[in-house]
Image (cartoon, rainbow, N blue to C red; front, side, top):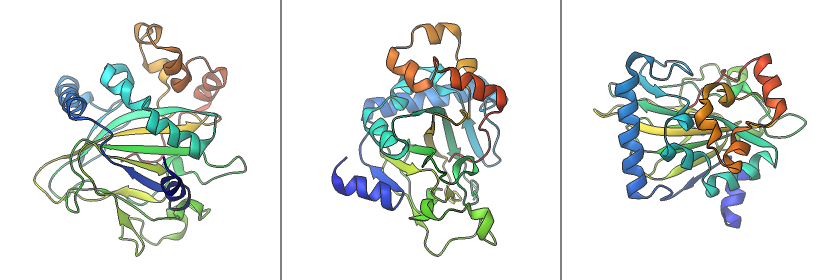
Length: 257
């Protein structure tokens, strides 16, 4: 990232990177997510939770090499380090498609319901566009600078579902990625088109926070055995703190777009 991009991510809480996913990789991600939706059927997304008005998939690191590339992308990890510092891990990699028919609206929220604490920022999210994000197909909205408010929206807004006077929407082309300090107030908007709006969400947390999906339990022994040292570090497979945190409770609270 250049100096202006760093400043935007730090001050506004979001940044859109253009053309991160090349055409061949994009086609593979689209094909694999659709295959998984068909294969998993009514259980799709069950490692996380269902969401009315959206298709979901979860635990994607364990479901194909094309997804491993998402969570280890160097441009994304650079931004993770900028926001979270050196002690971080993947929390989850999910798929979400806002379905047509005016579906997909979410309240403004902070991921895991967290505000920064004495150690600093604790949550970071990346939204990978598998389709163009347009004004009408359910793009993510966010309130610039709200990651420094010290409040979650539910504490101060009368209606977190209502449009916020300062909100922006993240628009872009398939292959772009939105980076967010996930303390930023944000949420999915309604899809008013006739097609699903597809995306992936690579969510990272500070090392002292629980993973939304405990990777060591969800990934098969075979998958873990072939992971590179870099991937083992990203997934916190060898971090004893992570085992203790998982026994105390998962980080399932909050939304991911």
